[in-house]
Length: 139
Image (cartoon, rainbow, N blue to C red; front, side, top):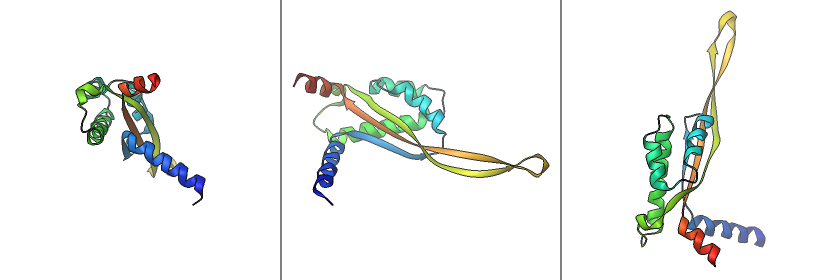
């Protein structure tokens, strides 16, 4: 590994150590449906996002709620000295990528076969402290 590549890898590693995130892989929901739920909570504070997801009628909301709870738990393990109530956490980033697609064939009239694509997705959720933004802007 070259010097520049090693430095960049170390920089990415340090940034990842400071972030609090959670990743959900191979969730058996189409990415389009999951993005509808992700758009609702993007940029919202964590407690409000949990309330929105809990009372949402959309099916993927349950998976995103569990993912958000996991991200909160990850944040708490990295910041044991700070209370969550004082932290003012919010959903900094949430994005949905397409996962693998299972391809099936459904019998159709006149000997044809229709393709069925059972889609899945990967969701990445990053939470952050709003106070960190204020501190970096003032510095």
